[in-house]
Length: 404
Image (cartoon, rainbow, N blue to C red; front, side, top):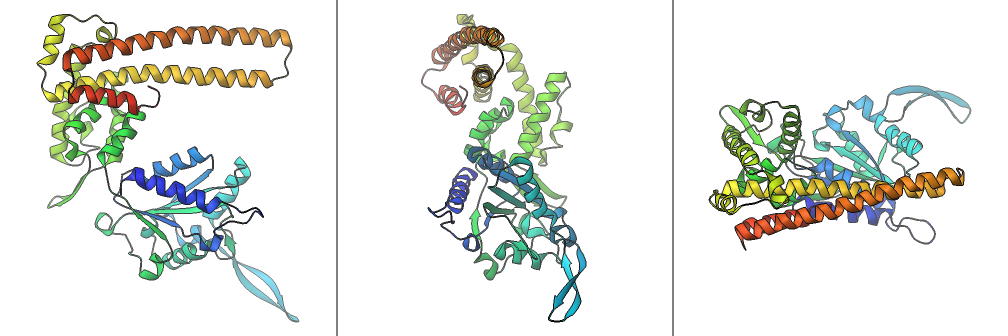
């Protein structure tokens, strides 16, 4: 399944595991709550899913990559303690609390959140010495005498062996104790995420035309060649920063994130054409309604890649403006809420209310301006492209973007 569907399944699992009856007991006993195992290729957003679920449910999240752990750090260190059995006292080996479990308890103390997700990434890549203890952990949710706190759901993730030589395949006995969810890369699902998270419009435009370049892992005589969703997103962040600083973006930068030479070359060429569109077809003129017939005709002569690039560029501009409006509105509401609850003098409170009133009036003007600019953008696209796939892309972008 795709990562969006997997997210729904994981969220529903967490809801079910945290559900309690009238007496306060979990409907599904802790020992029967199978850890979730998210299984799929690298770089498709498994960690981002955990952050999203924790944020939406307002629960805690503690994440660990198991490849970074030794047996000692995961399980704890041994120490000698005294125990009395009958009339005799003995030296007995015990273990300190696992670093992983200690992090959960520390998180609870720090945040006060008693429910959450313990996310263990690359769970099937643990060392040979740690593997038996991890299998026991998946079954009993404990390292030695220390257990995961009630209310914390264990979610794990791992890659198939074809992507990682360190993978240890689970036997049936282990698989029968976990809730396995297979995930696969899906550009359509990632695109929705990209539109809402500011991924560079050149990347979205390129993948709209060449979606086959979205995700690829292949073995070649020269070694592994790959392109992942993580690579595209990380490249986007760097591109945005380079553009902001006026640093040139070239193939040498792009190939650091896209490890398939053909994709690197294709995207480099596309980005070069995209930057020309950005300078030639000034979005401000379109949003201000300053468009001539010759400008419209020139737009109609663009090839499909250029048209999609322009559409996504326009979507970016309007999405940034709507996002600013939404964030300003939320900040005003939060400020008013805090101001209402404060115990400062009425005269001072009145002054602060007046400041927020001025902010709100400015926001109303901005919203009206943004609405008009969006209207001009839609009018331009309808006039130039009519009822076409290009127009549908613009409407889709505006609809997918939560701020818009």
